[in-house]
Length: 505
Image (cartoon, rainbow, N blue to C red; front, side, top):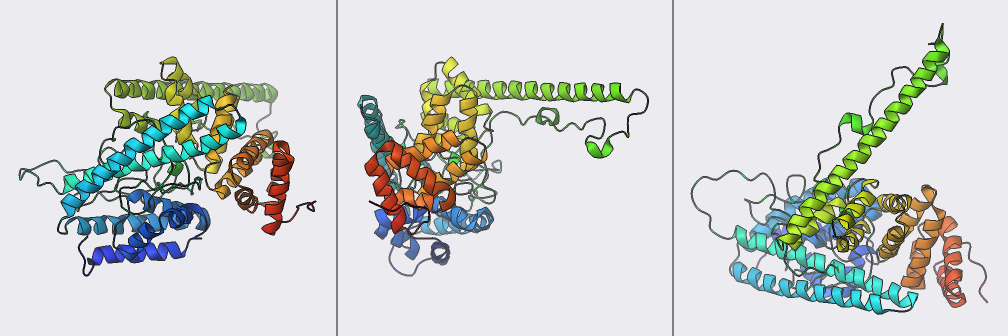
């Protein structure tokens, strides 16, 4: 933007960003990634010299949710959406803004294509890799590549929307807009700037790209498509376009599914919501529980109780059958829609279908994977798993368990391996969630993947979330990898001042 005094809206949003980052730990999460990888771009955003891409704002909000709680992030997201929209509108009405946006769009399209090529190269390298350690390392790089692609895709859409907003419109009457343009999927994999997670769902802290509004993509990447998605995934940029937040575009990506408040609403599946009967809200005909024992006995009371139990069982079975049928219908509808988009070459919109589906209830996800394979879209199962890897810890754990329960253990393990590219504290929260649902073997698998893919210092940061539980589990996982891994992790844990570490040799 031209030199001189900043527009009041841009300056106000920059002040908001500075206040937001003061509440964050600069050494962790997405904020730490941005500060490490593009300090100049980050500083330009905080000083108001650049308006950051919306995915960067979302990532900072995700950090806030992780570090300060979902309520704090919800409140901040609503304010951020309002200020962001005003800031972009003021920025884009400045002299030379149209040309600057076009140049930025050209650069972002190049970033998108480059990220897609890296993703394909890494997939080929993983297929050719012989050692487990190499595959784990390449898998982490692939997660970052996918996130880079998604961020570039989201930014491409945002820039498209901003350019369209600057295009003069016909003077005739038009129907009022009730929502943002069709949104496209954004990156998911790790600690690169991307939409804020529901509760900062976990994100990986590997390298990404520029955090500023420049053409570089600030984050990891994972997708193979090179086509820009339908415009509109980013926040609207003018007064005529809806602001991100409660009344506008929501943060993109499964990692934010479930977050409330402005810009953090969870995506919903395309299928209709289940009816009350399908949700199992029917009330038993007779009061249940020991406190009512005998109150309904009388003559024939024993027979009545048996009938009640049989009725309860019948209702339960009917509910389960209805839920299975609803899951199958939703999966078939999503697959049919996906197939039509793939056939039309609309790969970006197809990716949106998968990103939204990743936020479905956990029991529906294995059904969707099955239907994808049945329709000859097995490659899309991989994309679905990438999206699922960005779910909040509790939902990620539930998704992994659902896959295992549906006899898709390989997919469940792949999902957990991919999730270790997220920030170490989020990996710790996922392990805690697995332990809470009675899946210690999956928790051990996740922690071993963490030890293999991350540095001992990063594993120690994960252990700091719950030392009493995670220190011994991580040491066991490291011992299963190698004696040197165990020694290095023990040293990192001791250096971090965590309890429960045996003496070093």
